[in-house]
Image (cartoon, rainbow, N blue to C red; front, side):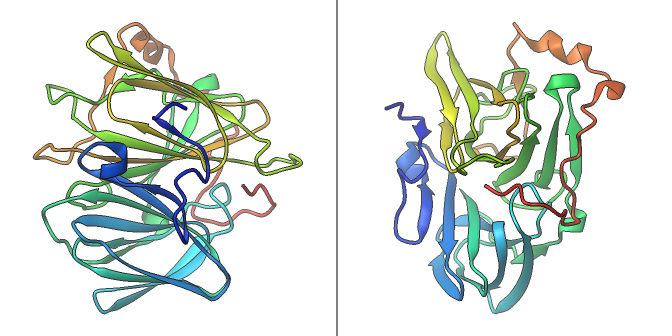
Amino acid sequence: MNTYYLPAGSTADGPYDTVVTPESAGWGYSGLKVLQLSPSGTATFATGDAETLVLPLSGSCTVTCDGETFEVQGRRNVFSRVTDFVYAPRDARVTVSSASGGRFALPSAKCERRLPARYGPAEQVPVELRGSGQASRQVNNFCTPETFEADKLIACEVITPGGNWSSYPPHKHDEAKDGEAELEEIYYFEIAGNGAASPRDGFGWQRVYGTADRPIEVSEEVRSGDVVVIPHGWHGPSAAAPGYDLYYLNVMAGPGEHRAWLISDDPAHAWVRSTWAPEDLDPRLPLSSAVEKEGDDAR
């Protein structure tokens, strides 16, 4: 099995469907857990040396941290709404409870500074539309350097309409140099059912490839709950199969003194950006906003 591709359930541990730690990934900073709670379920964990977000993938929850309680509206699924979330600092004890049950992503990054616990309203999450034509996608910038304060953690959501490519042109961020930052990255995927017989029927595709001196090779069909870890190398495209909208959560962190999301495009494909024009944006976008939409396109 490819060590950079983690199929759904392959890292499960107790109430967590997905567990990626810096130790398991073989790097220094980025982590992700996905917490599954049954109705009236509760989980308590210590953040340790990592700042951590509580980001609903489905369902609502109550989060208690540092003596404060935050009510999180959440969402029906990742395609129905841009969600609110909670930031928990390092060295904190966090309790997540859910009356109706749900699934909650816990992206994290080892860090030095201890910032205050905070609530992030869905209405304040910038929704960015990138690319054009079949490279059009939606980016929910809920925890990027320009939109939300953190010490090391960078996280965003990308939603790609069926038949489109995202994470494109292929790019990398594995060196500290002008115009590029060194960042480890986790991709966590979900696929919209869109009428499929089973939630696992929908699929997409993820590509990662290395430079001459730092080889890496990933070319995998991805389904809901799958993870790809990217320590280095060019990554992209993330391709959504026709008929199946593709969601992925990006979690990034690295050793840089400044929290910055800077990338270098693969020179062989960088020219594609020059072909993009605003009028060519896929008319299906945006696929979601802070307002819950009706219908059932669940995972």
